[in-house]
Length: 285
Image (cartoon, rainbow, N blue to C red; front, side, top):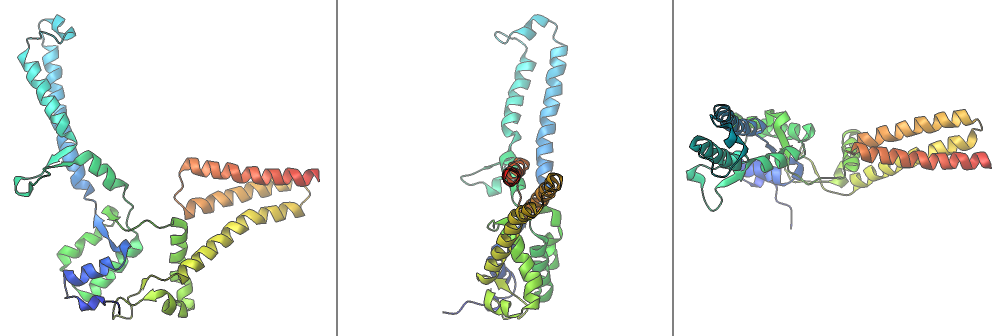
């Protein structure tokens, strides 16, 4: 059974969503960070006003003894303000949906959802440009409704997370090696569109080439300083080789992956330890 082409679907959102569903990184949508910040600031300001009112009530308390006790407190204004504070604090991270949209779920945990949204991976400029180019050529939806792609800093990608190092090398292979060797495109791409300029990669050839490149880089990083140190007898030069190799290793590692600082420190410490043990062993020999 052949693959359904994108052009099989009616022009408009049916065809545009067919394109998006054909490649998971095309699931690019806005975070609406500015609107989320506006809602949080609004709730925050309501609490700030209540906090100021509570401070004023405390300052104007004629019987200071009651500031040191909660039981039998007879200041109704303070009791009312504290009740309002409790209500607004519970709503601080919650946005109540309009009545027209209410169903079984009437609230959105704004703080938690905002935190989750902000942690979603940022959309790649490459994927944004691909969608913009396709829309410019096909004009399936109006400019006003496709303008969301212009908010590049606010766009997130809901697509599956790749091995970042392999994924970056795949992009390198697609951008630099495929133009030099067109036969790779014939073997590695599936035709989801009748347009000869639309390619969506799904095969394993380019991914395997990327993995081969990654293994080659790792092998060179690990073996080159070992070979150099075995050929050099001067201890000071060996130390320089170890230092330069470590810097190169961490630089490439940080560029290909999204390692945290502690992970980089541990990787660097392990790398230096291995090289130091080798250098010490060759000195003893």
